[in-house]
Image (tube, rainbow, N blue to C red; front, side, top):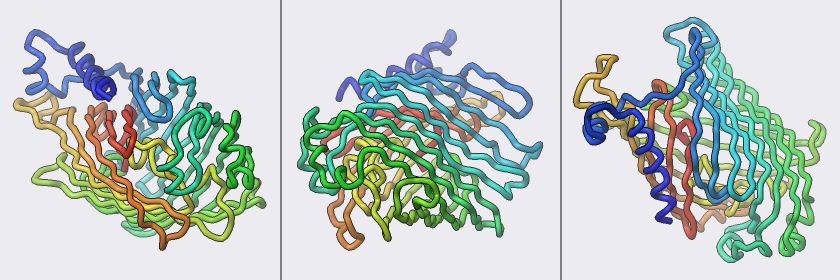
Length: 389
């Protein structure tokens, strides 16, 4: 654990040291935090900032990833927010290979938004079974949980502004999981036997959302409320039939000044009218919720989690080149809890979560995040772009 904690500190200290001039590192941190520079490829409103960084997660162990942050505007409009596409390609010490790209694109006048992601993973993985009890009782070993997983997903939300604060749109979700090298326990698991090891889901859905956030990728203030209904069906080309309702509530509140934000999220995912395969049950853990837990350790038909996070960007003692006191560095701290169950009425076994993180602003409101999450019986260290919510 001590090694995992030191890794993000060493990474950021290395970056800071490389930009230091004649004054001490301490003065640089206090007075010139916005001096962080990355290589940039820039043309008009298009900008690419590449990176290479180490990280550690329960799923991949030690991971070396390379990628970048692409920002641009679809129209020459000073008011229009920057669109962004952070992407990464990584290879880890346990043989995991991953590709991930997230897009948040604002079209003309912000009357249309396209938000989504593409993922590809070929990796050793673990499956504890479905349900809270299995996640707590099944030991993580080669003979009880280990298997190999090949997974890809294309997910997009196309949202049209129908009112000043209301969006309605189409949701498309296409994904496939192939499980290989199953252990003896998985070969006898009733969900695996029922659903199989090659699962292809094609879903189409409808989203209605209320959004007053000042900036989708990193809000300082506002409220976001979303409801998504998605149906996965064989007539759409997949080999499964089931339905999902996703409910998401987020709120952001400035504390005394801008760039000091208290943010909270409550999210639920509920399945009904069909048979959700074991690969696509509602899951806790990973990069995007309950950081520190292995993604999929806790899985079942229904899931709810909540997170309360404090985000703090430092102030400089001297003006920067832009004429303000904003630093490019900051930190976050969060607490959270979540639960999974076969029905909504059985959501009663809550697991704890907490963590801290560092932030470095590469472009206005676009951060690279370094998070360390504590979980029940495990922990995780993550380096990636964009806030969790």
